Amino acid sequence: MLCNVNCTSQQKGNSDAVALNAVQKKSKIEKIEIKEQARGTDRLITFIPNSKTTSLNGNVSVSALSPLDWASIVKQTELIDLDKIASLKSPSEGRFTDRALISSVLITVGGKTYESSSFDAGIPPKELENLYKELFKNIKTK
Image (cartoon, rainbow, N blue to C red; front, side, top):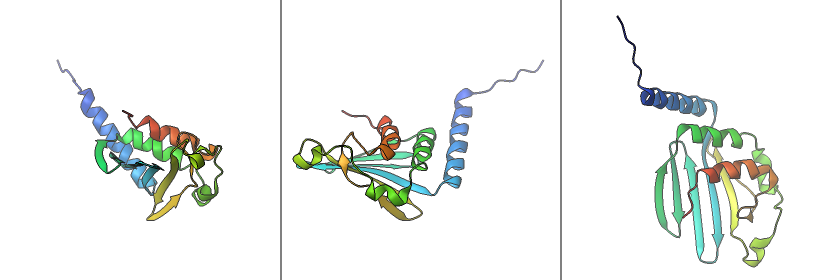
């Protein structure tokens, strides 16, 4: 009698690695950053395959980013017309009176960085909304 036993955790790890390799081969997206600033606050959150780096007023922390999370981020990023993100209109203006952090999204593709127009933290232009939500799913606030 033969008995076939599989280890689920090994299979999951392999499928994550396969998913990441497929995304990396297909996409030239190297990193995505969220920059948020105001008087007394300087935050930069950087997403790259396998990791997320958060810098808050000079204090840096690095955490893991799963291949599936990176794939979801890349999927949302690929829906954006990068040549137009610098001219997107912000839906609010609280950042002009210190009611909100000044935010922007930076996307690096094939060595070229595209930066969005500035917007109020939490209220991105509609064209960036799905990407912004996907990024913040992966950010644990304290």
